[in-house]
Image (cartoon, rainbow, N blue to C red; front, side, top):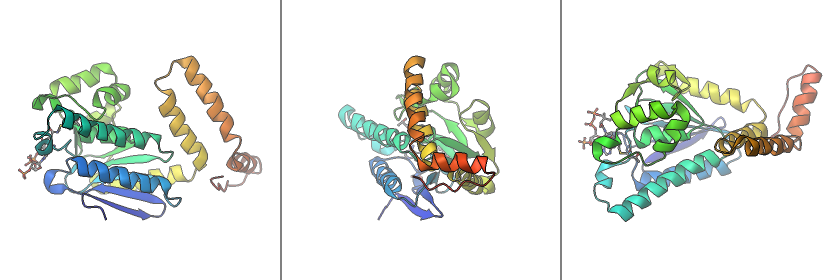
Length: 258
Ligand code: CAA
C-alpha cells in the first residue's frame, strides 16, 4: 500500500520506516503524504500504543528532497513546506509516544522530523545537522523553531548558520537526543523504551504529552492553568483509581486505558 515507507504493527508498537535508501530517505511530497497516512493509521489503531520511526539503510533522513525542491517555484515550495509542518504538528498532537530511532544521517528535514518525535535515541553512527544554508535556503520543517526550543538559541544558531554536522555524542550533550547506543542496540533500545512507557497508564501518558506540547509556549500563568485542568482530567479515568489503589495495596497496577 505504501511505496516510500514501510509500516507494520507488532506487539503494540507501530514501526514506520522511511524506505528510499538510494536517495538517503529524502522527504518528497509522497513520503510526507505516506507518513501522514501511516501516522493516521497508528493514531486510530487501538493496538498501537507507541510509534518507532526510523530510516532504511545508512540514513535516518538526509533532508527534504533537493531534486524535487529544485523544480519548485515559491508557491509550490510553500505548499511542500506547509505539508511538512502538517505532518510534524500532527505527530505532536497524537496522544501516543513517538520515538525516533536515528540510525544514520538526520540532516535538514531529517533532523526536523526527529525533533517532532517525543524522544530521540541515536546510533553511535548518527549524524545531525541543518545544512540548508549550503543550498541558499533555511530550515523549513520547523528547524528554526524546534531546534532552539531543544538546544537553546545560541546552539541552534551555531548549527543553522555553520551547517556543521555533529555526531551522536555531541547531539546528546546539547540535548538534541536523549540517548546514544551501539548501532545493533538501536531498535532494541527503542523497543525497551516503548515498553517502559506502554507499561504506564496510557491516558496519563497521552495527557502528559499534550500538556507538555500545548503548554510549552504559553506564559507560566496560562501553562499552570492548562496543567490544572489536564491533571483534573486524569482523575476521571479508571486508571487513576487502579494506579492509586494498586500502590496502596502493594500490588502491580493493571491499566485498562479507561
Ligand atoms: N535530497 C535528494 N537526494 C538526496 C538527498 C536529499 N536531501 N541527500 C542525498 N541524496 C541522494 C544523492 O543525490 C545521491 O543520489 P545519486 O546516487 O542519484 O547521486 C544519493 O542520495 C546518495 O547520496 P551521496 O552520494 O551524497 O551519499 P554520501 O554518503 O556521499 O553523502 C550525505 C551522504 C552527507 C547525506 C549527502 O548526501 C548530503 O549532504 N545530502 C544532502 C543533505 C542536505 O543538504 N539536507 C538538507 C536538505 S534541505 C531541507 O531539508 C530543507 C528543510 O528543512 C525542509
